[in-house]
Image (cartoon, rainbow over all chains, first blue to last red; front, side, top):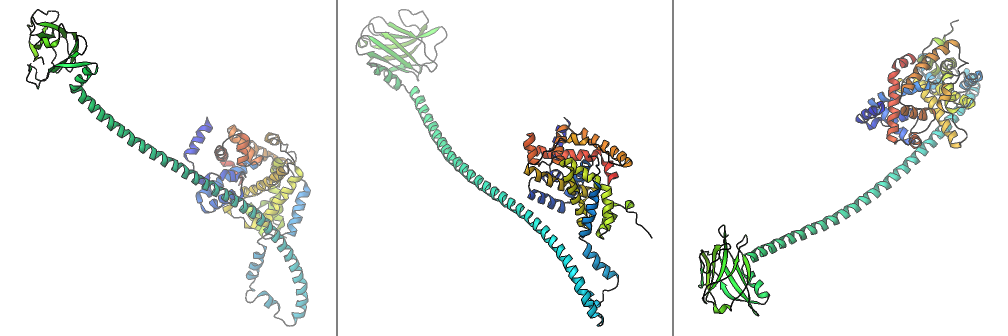
Length: 349
Length: 194
């Protein structure tokens, strides 16, 4: 629980500069270039430097969790002997500064040494011995230094080679990613074009559907469909009840209708359009007149748009009747003559 | 004739003497820290002979490079033990590469007897050790684990991630949290040690 909270806090305060500091302090970095990067950060960033010091002190505490152990006494002797054969790095600087402090800075050391002509020969002999020893010693030191530098160089070379390998890998990865992204973009572009085409097609379909819908609405309101429907099934129109013909007498100017008679037999269909809803308790009644007593042949209601299609049997051929009449009559109350309001009438053809 | 009391000199004064090629100063530093450096190496390598070589290298490094030490490198003890730790890790990884030997678990070493330590030192060491160990024990198990694997076993962060199955980022976070907690818990001890 505590660590979860710590992690949360740590994530909230995440700073990539500090990412590898703890690993560096614990000696847990994997590659030389990582160590170099951390050291460069410590060198130039005061905040990183401060964090480094804090973590390094904690690492020191880890070191002293181990109880001290007495090494063999011979170890100290070996170290002291080796120190006697090796020179700390500041030795040369100290020698020069000593000379300056002793007030012998007026002339180079070799000029001061050889100012006395008498001493030249003796000095030369001593010089050969001293210089020889010094050169031998110095040569030995230089050899050690060169070996150390070679070792450092070898280490650095490995680090550089690792870095180059890493960079090469990173470059290849990046190129592959770019190629993959380009490919994805191409696919997306193709998808976009296809989608655009689909949208255009759908818009065209919607437009066509709109046109078809309008055409259908028009057809529904156009009574010609009635004619079409009736003639299609072997009927022929024998009586028009159209509002624009002189034969029609109507109190409903929007009403129109027809009677289609089947070519064979005595079946007929009466179709009407544009009638208002009948009064409550009333229904429309179709009468055939002019051949004796009026003949009520059908009683019907109309749809919401005032249309109705009624099939009935002609008592005699339609040409024997002179008039077709539609009235409103009481439901189930039809008499021998029309008594209700006449809404549509027409002479037969 | 005046004889300098090297044991009474501060670490930095001894370093200055080392810069003057004073071997007695090196000897004084060895007397002061040699047992701890040797113990750390034994703790990590589990090999007294190899640990002698490491200790020798560490103090020869101080002899050669001590004069170049500056406070920018942190406190002297921090610097000294970072040299010791890095040198031991190098040896440990070299050996691991050779697959020549295995390390024992940390708790085996934490119980190492310090019978060779002189009584006053042993008392001080025991006191410090107890406090630091107590602080270590208070760390969450996961944090203690990554610290032990890295600092004492010499595993890299990637190796720890692989070994424990934790994401690399989690390993890094736990290392940092552990060190910061340890530092906070023992801030007074650090002052006393420095």
